Length: 396
Image 1 (cartoon, rainbow, N blue to C red):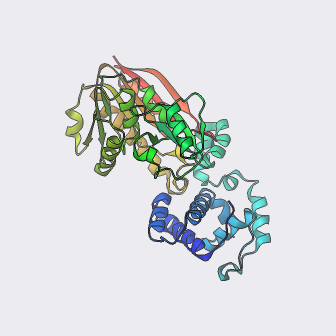
Image 2 (cartoon, helix red, strand yellow):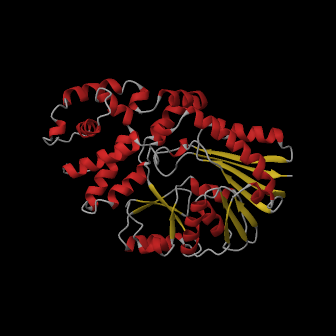
Image 3 (cartoon, rainbow, N blue to C red):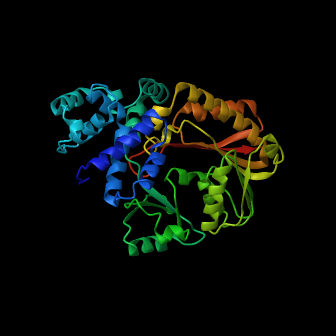
């Protein structure tokens, strides 16, 4: 990152960090708001702000330690650039920053995992307890910068043709091993591309792209995506069904389904029916009605921390305990929508066995008419995958 540090850039970063850590806002929303209200910021400035903010949020505890634990965002930013070996401009706000102290604190910090990897003590203990020897490598991978992965919309184009068009638009890319429809883009700002606007691809992580095929859908089936959100997996399911059959996309958040409507129109999909889960009657009306059921349930999101680094600081023990109850309730209630002989996939973007394998074991112990056919854990890597879990069950 070759940059010049100007005060408007630093002030924007301070504003975003204040909103994230003092007001509980999400990084992406704060970035969007600041960019919208500061039109004078050029593309390069915006890239600098976004990268700096994400890095500081990712390593917040480390930078705090290197600045005597103070919540002074100017000093945190100075610390970040000192450790990146940038020469600090002579800003008034940085006159008291001691570069030697910062560097000596850093050398001490990297001896301790919770500081080096910048994670709350309780979360490090939980990860160690549940994932044991795998935890250190997972933790390091969760601190990698998230890559931009797209999925080819095969209803409109095939992957070789899409990649040819990417090349024509000077959008560099890399192939992803064993995933023919997934492509890693090496250019971030692609939403203005005509290829995106024409619905030739969707942004979707490599691990997330493995869920819809795992459901084993076929053309003509009746399928329910019961926790659809904005519908990334619904779109993928519809393309695998070749836009033939019937796909009901359910969610408790009405606004997310409105976003899905825009997306399936852009994708050229006609088989999706979004339905708002207004009350329990919506689920009861669908009992024994589908051949395939996807439960991509709410979770801690620990598998996607590299994409959402502020989650490390927003998560609590209480939230994780509560979300596990919600997961089990969804499993018990929503599974009734599946017909006998049908298949259901339970999925999370968590890496904790207590949200994954343990939930399936508990469900099977209470529902003898279901049988586990296959499950799969995808651990976060430094390339194309977030952390995901999926289990496919058959109803007898």
